[in-house]
Image (tube, rainbow, N blue to C red; front, top):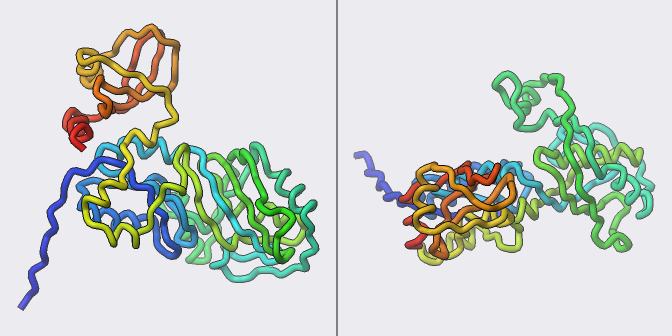
Length: 314
């Protein structure tokens, strides 16, 4: 006798969940678990974190998915643990050891090596990455023992801080805080720092601490979410405009708000701006994103009237 599978009814959920992704779970697996907990009709994440990595993974539900690309393109912040003296096949702790070297590094040398990485640099994407080549992820080639040529990519390391510089433990284990542009491979940065020090290195641990204006301080674990009822979980969701909270704000009256939602350009006596967030007259009436050019407000991403009403009723 076949068992009957109970279908859990889904619902319209609009908002952003700041998830603290656990070690060993893929970003998609984390997304699917959260989506089931919220019974959400529509959900997506804002950029992959490797299973080895933990930390901030913004998840978008409903109307917020329209702005997921914004978070994907935003600068990121990480806390990385580097193990000097050992290089691996994957540039992280999961790979096989390629070479071991003697480590003789003090704070001054390590700080100088990190300083050399700050600014616009070129990185060769690692073979063990999700970057696609001819429709296949690079890690698929790597698992098959095939190495393909990769073009260097320009990324920006905005800053590298070394917490507790004078109190690091072993001279072969160092922790750095990195603020960087999208597309930066921290494992490649770890290798480059090790190469600059002459002893090699790999990424021993990685934790994402920030994405654009969002930080890990407001994130929640899957275990925390699982222990709550639905109303309490809903209360943890940030509004969709949290993804663009660092954009200038424009507020429209009723008539202009209706026309804006219909895609009609509005005349405004405001200077040009590449990105603005637009609201109706009600405090929670987020309408979407736009730009201002030549005195016109031009929509770029619009919520539907149903989504706006959903936010007003939340």
